[in-house]
Image 1: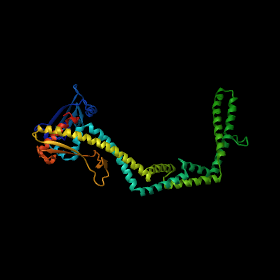
Image 2 (image 1 turned 45 degrees about the vertical axis):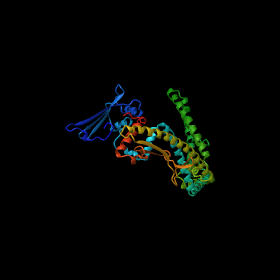
Image 3 (image 1 turned 30 degrees about the vertical axis):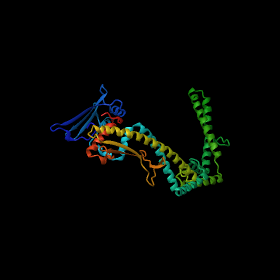
Image 4 (image 1 turned 90 degrees about the vertical axis):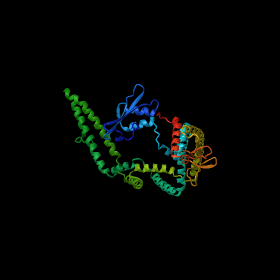
Length: 434
């Protein structure tokens, strides 16, 4: 229950409303446990310990507390994983799995296996990626060559037009202006006359600037101070009107009714539309397609030079991988001798004084067609995620008996004792305290 296990009503004593189980944990130095206690907001006692409580009611509801704080049951489960290891009578069944037997050695060896094994896994990941890419490029060379031709054709077509970002939007606006140049010129000219006055100086059409200038002249000569104070505001209006008039004049001068220019712009728009019909909805999308196509082409090089470069990288990684694998194997072999001796000593205290354990470490041969085959000392071995080794625990039941796989040489009770001996020996390799 303290380990976050399932609450059963049968645990409650008959006639009682609740069952309680309480435990005091010391966890100093166990980083994971320290984090769990801190995150839960538990109150820690002066001696650095914390109290966990689990209550089970007759109605099936259960509650969990840690350091006086109500917590989800999962918090107790996480804490117990850091501090408690439970050895049950069915644990010996794990010994029937080869992967578990290899894990026993790795736990016992500690960093002497863990560090080279980590390096092995990192190199193996890159090695497998290169093998996969080389295989794909080799087997799909014709298909990839066809795809590459299509991408190259598209890029050639786009590069020939050489679109600029947002160019389609700009051309649309320019075409609108060129197509409506007469209307735009009339509107701008009339606005310019209204602001700046008649270009021939007609006194009957002075424009807004002339009218403001006349008003400014009259206020400037007035004797009333209130009227003279309005003059600066009219001066500001005169400057603003002058700027607007100048811009309208420039706009009229830049309007071009050249039919040849309109035809040229329309032709450019047609070129862009051919691209947007084939590759994307707009010019920016076409440019994005081209960028993606160039990246894809870099990974679709099926030339002999590219394949040779990949093969060379694969072989270089294989050499590194073989070196790491050999280091892992050597560390396991050293640990196997020590582990076997210590387990055998423990068995003598479990009424198996004549029994002896042997631990073998052998590299697994690669089968025909193995895509993860690795050459080590002239032999092809299978490079799995945990190295190239098969580990097996053998039991010699008594002096003179042949060593046999532990699950074949031991009875059910003996298998339980072997597992218990292993757990005792491995205790130093675990971080759990109980």
